[in-house]
Image 1 (tube, helix red, strand yellow):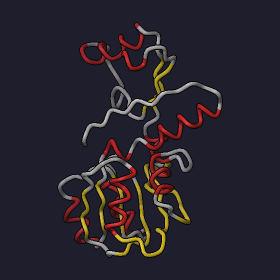
Image 2 (image 1 turned 30 degrees about the vertical axis):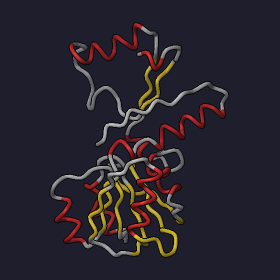
Image 3 (image 1 turned 90 degrees about the horizontal axis):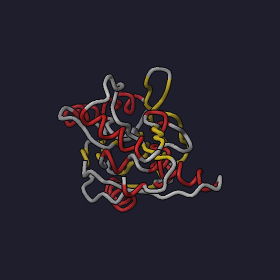
Image 4 (image 1 turned 90 degrees about the vertical axis):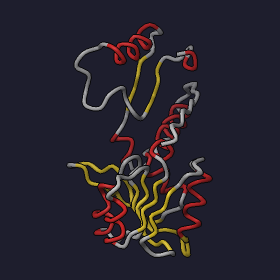
Length: 200
């Protein structure tokens, strides 16, 4: 916990587990006891931070790409986990890829180039969002930006005639926490940002 020495709370996007913790043993114990021992609270905002239309991860990517006419995207039950919008005029796939590599500090962006070279409408679901490929196509998007993809996304993208940009799970999900940091600083709180890229 050395990087967090002196912190009252850690704000993170991914929590300690997906689906709850039944027993505090082994790895769960190691993680939780470190927080308890150092008297540090943990605040996690996963899906709500993915889809928040102002502070969220998808909104951060939409803003860095200067998308216009943004709307909620990526239905998950009654909520959404992404955003969609209109690309600036004459934005090409290569320009999109270069921008994401530079701004997200990820030089391993992969593109399944089955849509048009000139991108017009972009759908974004950060992290692991290829399950929303059909919704993206149905919404009129020619490009889906997400973090990582499953093997079958290649064929699904080809059949749908849509570009899929895989910009890294970690890399696509840092914008929301950075925006929360800015908000906390506006409230007069002292913050520090600690990055731990996974390469995934």
